[in-house]
Amino acid sequence: MNEELKKAYALLGLTEDATREQVENRYYILMKRARAEKSRSEAGEDDGEPLDLTEINQAYNLVLGIESEKSSTVEKPTKLGHFFYYYKFHVIIGIIVLLIAGYMVKEGIDKRREAANTPPANLSVSLFGNFYFADVDLLEQNMLKQIPEWQRIATTLVFNPPEIKSQQDMALQQKSVLMLMTEKDELYVMDAKNFESLASQGAFVKLEEFAAKTGLQLPQDKLLFARTEEDPADAAYGIDITGSLVFRGIETSGERLIVSIRASEDKWADSRLLLDKLIRP
Image (cartoon, rainbow, N blue to C red; front, side, top):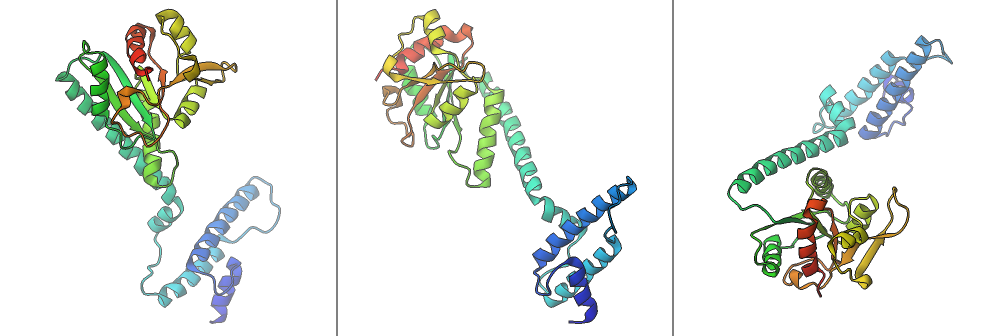
């Protein structure tokens, strides 16, 4: 190794056996430091000799040029390559958000088309949580059998993975948040984890208020309580309906089933009618 290359490694603060990734990272750090020192100098806060951008670039190009000659399979990085190297996470997240937004637009169009050919729903129910294999069509049929005079119960499945282990899990979680923000179903059936999260955010109606206005007999031994930022006192927001006949034949991944109310008051009468069926063992 010639003296010029040794000096280049020394200027970058690297040993001569540094990997390409170490060279890239060190260059990025030095460039940020040099720009910061330049800004301080221009502001009259000069605290020493600033790093020389020209020398850093020359050393970086020399080291990287030699490494490129060593490996024919590695191309010299371009400015675009630098961008994706340092901002690849941001790019991936941006792509995921765009895909989710596109999916939501398409789903909205499909739903409008479907709505034009289907009777209006008496009520809407969301199966929200770790229920990836749940058959929502069968669930809707089971619920309609309990109230045969109803024409339709709009039933949706929103799979929210319990843990984020991949980019797909992240995308599914982001989709579930978007659906929660843009769509408001009357009843939510959740697993325990999602109930605790949503109830603490004040997403649901207090069951005592609902029962007082509708006459629903609350099963005291099945009530689930939570606190919210607005109301630090414990209040009942959910009912454990695990084992309900309505879920016979529905794959629920072994999760507890908890139902909560998100309906506006003009839908409370219908919500009470369906809840009365769901809470029966």
